[in-house]
Length: 165
Image (tube, rainbow, N blue to C red; front, top):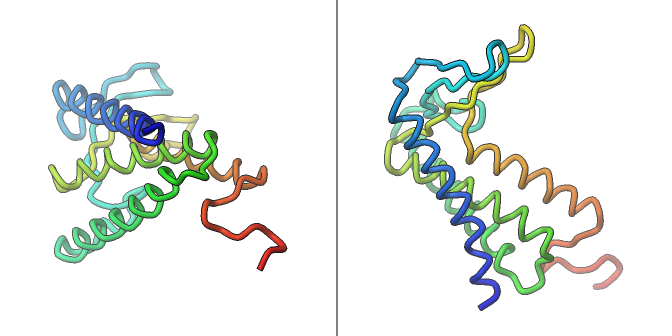
């Protein structure tokens, strides 16, 4: 029962992501930009048909769609298994919940729209960062936390402890 309570975390991330995308779609058209902090942060609506940073967007739809679907299912299955595992530590479960919620948000976009809605747009001097969304933010923070946990000695559930056969 306690593990099922943890499902509120990825569901909360999913809700925040979908709500933020619905909000931005209600007042911006693709290609439009609204400056929030002039010269630093904008809301800029873009549609990403590819993966991270738009990679693989040039693939034909009949290849890209099934590829992303299968990769998404495999990732959700793997990280979901670890997330719900009895042996997963709280720190790791928080990180994985963020990753899962973000993956579900972007996956829902791909399923419903055929692309991911991006709108968070940062500029650092003359460098323009890739436009991203709330789901991407949670995935990145979750990934950093998960790797930090691994580096601190947290183990992946089901993996053998060092020195044991």
